[in-house]
Image (cartoon, rainbow over all chains, first blue to last red; front, side):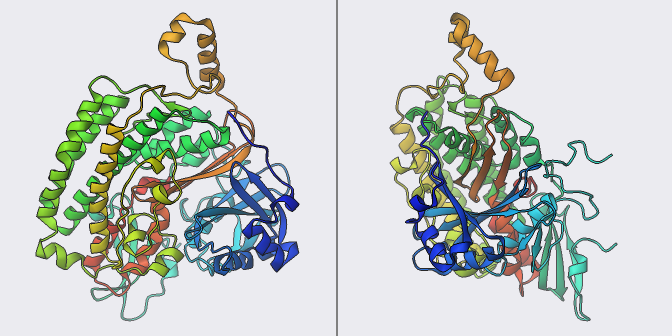
Length: 165
Length: 399
């Protein structure tokens, strides 16, 4: 078994097209980056995620034309509590990148990227349903997997495994 | 309180709501569709899902890494091996593990057999929905053969759980490869039989051609993957473009069509049947000898014979079964080409023996979003054809 060490130094990663393009656009957009197990993660500022996605989608150097997946991780009890992961894929460059947004537990909201990829709709609804993250400007933010009258958000770490009593 | 979905449809004077499912036979499980119709024409469609939601992602957080394999079968019950593979690949990536070639080739072979079995269920039920009942019986005849092969190798017909983190559960039994060989020899002629029943059939052509059209731009925007994406003209297959578990050693063609309709999806999947059997054949011919488990005693269960003769092996076995194995902290996203599209596992580890977070990116979930686009302005009867053509499995949509 061999794992190469994780690279978290932004200076070493700034040559990667996705990091370079975002840095050139707005240096405050990139809050950090990580290269671990052949996967690149970029921490993006919360207010800039939609524009960052639109930029990486259309830019000729990055061409991340496809949204594979959006998911969320609850890091309870540490703060910022939530991490939203956007997995983008480039069909032409055959490369993936993961954008991450950190959200505080007392204000878990982020702008929806449905205007960039309409396929984000169901993914964001799922995260809203199971984690209680609000996606601003989402066209139809309703529960999707749980019943409409369900209380609580089951995938949160403080959600009791046997349900609320 | 209004019914879910109804509230979002503001019905005009000329339209009405038709409720289709969740018990409708052509919704492939428990999919409920709210159709706003104007006469026979569909104005809008809202899918309502969640009837099969069992919280598998939450359950995974309470299990050891090796126990999760059993849960992954249950997501998509038509292609259990694919789900097993995607999960174990993700964990192996977290561990940084090398898998012996024989295990990899067995994985490829069984994966392609799973793809064939899954496509056969799709073809049978799709034809049944549209009214060609004979095809269903033909397809299930060959699927039965594949299930027997699965039973031989894993002891189970459907919930195989055959792949393990670090390799396979056990080596193939005696007579296994002969059985697969027999199937490989006979299968292409069976595909000819299905095509004989359908491809030239005028009713079949009329019901499929030009129905449920989806452009390449829409397919990409809506997160469509798999045969349905390729039918819309996007030349993308993860097996070829981002190879995993040794797919780079195999030669196969990726069928692509520019038509983007239900017919193109049908033709593409039937061609995939032929390509898949070619991959199985290559795997049979080139199957390497050697170990089927990685050399990692703290992760992989020892062989039965060693446990009976070596104290150390017995200790490792006891520790793995009772305490699990720890995985270095980190996160990975591993995607593979399932029969339906991009199956992805996002796993986050916090360094303990249980995953901190497991997320499954199921292809049917994303593909379902495209249904509205395919059916708008079409007849209700075309909705049935469109549902069949994206090949959804509600188990993996609801998880």
